Image (cartoon, rainbow, N blue to C red; front, side, top):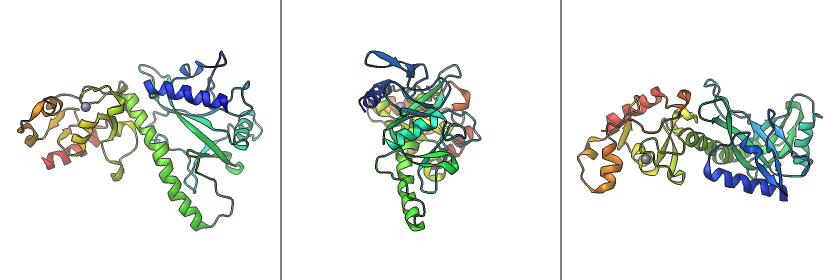
Length: 303
Ligand SMILES: [Zn+2]
């Protein structure tokens, strides 16, 4: 546990300054004066042999493929996440390390790909921790993953009503602890932790805004997101500002005609007609123009 706690503390420190870490950065961890990798160079399941017989981390690669929904992990009928074995052999060492972590109730780190480092194909990963493996489903060659200590696997033959109840509980936990933070990290990473409208560079004041809202079926992918500071997120949601499909900011007429103080003047009115100042480097991560058009129509109608 001392080793694991040190890993978690190190990751906590690293993620203060970035949303995502590369495999190289994840090989810089030190414990008792020695360096250790926290992920494999190619594979998804990793352990640090000197400090534990059990896996320390699992990893899910990033997929830029737009036809697959990102982070569309396997979810069981109980609403809990699943993680696949390596290959098909239950006795493969990687699978044994996972089983050992499960049997010893040891917390792990789940590294999930959220994008590429600027200018290349080097993947960056968001660490999620602690997570636990709480059951194994050998028929489906996978483990059941808990992202909160309160999540429990249901025994075989559980009553359908209980499964239904557990599913709604687990879906809420998975959304709050897993999908929403992943969306936020992927968006903030793509926008280099700056507001798309004003480039404010303080992550504690930034949100990952949806272009098409979650509640209207907007997908949780970077192209449906915008990194916005609290002021611009609020203004965007309340339709004081709109963003046209050519990435230009429009301020509502009634707001342009209001005169009151420097925040209104500089933070809102002076953005009128300006192009978004911060956009993702990678074209495939920039805001979806169709989703923006839909939202912009609503803005125009409101103003
Ligand atoms: Zn802003």
